[in-house]
Image (cartoon, rainbow, N blue to C red):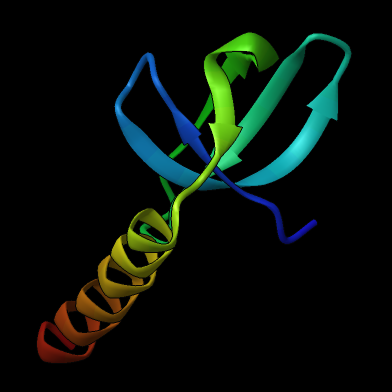
Length: 67
């Protein structure tokens, strides 16, 4: 799945990883994942999508720098 959503409860964008009934597993490029009720989610705005991409780039850059 490639759906990018915004979780109002955690105030973070993420990608939908798993749908499990009313719960959705959402993940970030850092490897952080969490489960949330689908009612807490809405489609991410363009700005929030760009924010998620930027987090992924920063995380990759930091991983390269620490190796």
